[in-house]
Image (cartoon, rainbow, N blue to C red):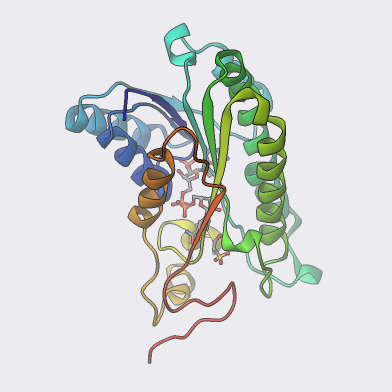
Length: 254
Ligand code: NDP
Ligand code: 8X3
């Protein structure tokens, strides 16, 4: 792959971290982002020394519209030549029947997974349109395809990501910008620990008796998508652990 610049949201753990390393291994220069500054800076130093690519760490919250605008607008000119935007930052907060739902949790999910993705896209995509070149990859979920018990609002945010992805593909068709998504099933990252507000036991139970996906599996999907020839667009890759049939049917061992 020729040298490209990738802007990846949510690289301080999980999928984002693996995707950043994978793209660096392919020779991409990286803009990496997240709220945890220390992790971001360590990661930037590690990637530079491992792969010899340029890395720009930017610490901010995707829920803050003005910060997103200023962050992208104030990028040095050469960092504005963004070839790849990976909208990955996101979370689930809680898993509760809708009648008992925590409205703060709902707002965190909607503000991050839907509005944050839109803010970053709104400020980065025009830079691609200007150059008539680019590729957007949205990290969706199997939860964007099917809804599971107590998944209500998280699933709604990922259904929204899928609608936004389809809308982007239509709107950006004439601009020579590819739009793809990845829809993983259960993957072991910090996701469940965040979802269950730090309860490790509940987080571990999600992966009990199955071999879950891991972040490298999602990096594999990204690598496949970005190494297709110019005339090919991968619309979506949906991947699950072998023991997961859909969002709520698992075959657990033991
Ligand atoms: P992690 O919790 O490991 O990583 C989430 C990343 O998102 C972190 O880097 C976090 O950084 C960042 N993030 C969260 N909120 C914000 C915010 N407000 N502003 C900026 N960055 C933020 O989870 P995963 O890697 O598993 O999740 C990545 C994506 O994959 C999410 O969109 C998730 O919904 C999706 N997904 C996950 C699956 C799974 O089973 N793990 C399956 C399908 C999809 P920081 O906290 O430093 O801000
Ligand atoms: C995360 C996968 O099925 O736990 O998006 O919601 S699931």
